[in-house]
Length: 227
Image (cartoon, rainbow, N blue to C red; front, side):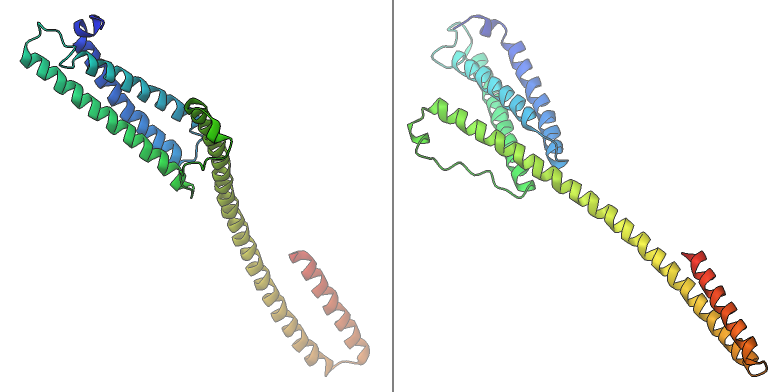
């Protein structure tokens, strides 16, 4: 066992604790990216790599300060203190890993899917553990890409639906305005018809025809102007 791990114990523990704090912030950012529908594959790879390094460093500390490997000259109370610190650090790292898995599962729930394990096929049964792990990673990556595309398409659909609603509202307003114009035209035609009827009782048939033609032309011009 390297003596460096004993000589730099305090700085190693401090770095590990700072890394754990920073990872909490990364997990919060990761959750936010999921909720806004971003592609999180690269972020997941970075988080998993860091968590793996934390576990490795913690395991080295555990081995170094086990009762079997701890320096014989170290006072028992100091050894006990360090072992408890290492244990607490391990619990914090485990909690980070569990939180990451929960957030990652939430990604699938947010997209209406479940993060189920793949059912083994015949060719998978002949694979080694490392080959199975690589196969699963590739499958998960493809699935993530497809889910991200589906989710982004759904968000675009929502935006289009909102814009369509605005257009329909504007068209309804235009139809209301047109109806009002038609109501006014109808009112004017009725008044014109009444005047024509009144005038018809007093004038010859020739004059009546002229007035009727003028009324029709006026109505056509009015309809043309309001279109």
